[in-house]
Length: 83
Image (cartoon, rainbow, N blue to C red; front, top):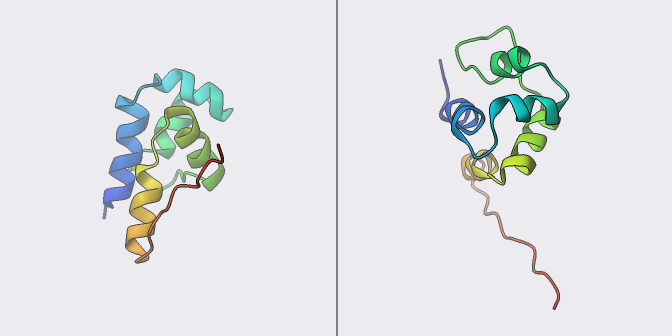
C-alpha cells in the first residue's frame, strides 16, 4: 500500500524546484538509485532519513515533515530568529 507521504516525497523529487539529477548528486547517490528510493511502488529500495533531510534542505520543501508531525498529532513551530 502506497502512503501519502511516499507520494509527496516522490513528487518533490520529480517535480520540485531542483532537478532530480541534481538532487541525486546532492544526496551522494546515482540518479537511478534516488528514483528507486522515492518510488512508492518499489518496496525493495528504502529512503533513509538522512537522504530525506538532504532532499528537504535542497528543495526547501518541508511537506514530508509537516505530514509526519500531523500523523503524530504534533504542531511544527518555526524557530524565531533574533533580530
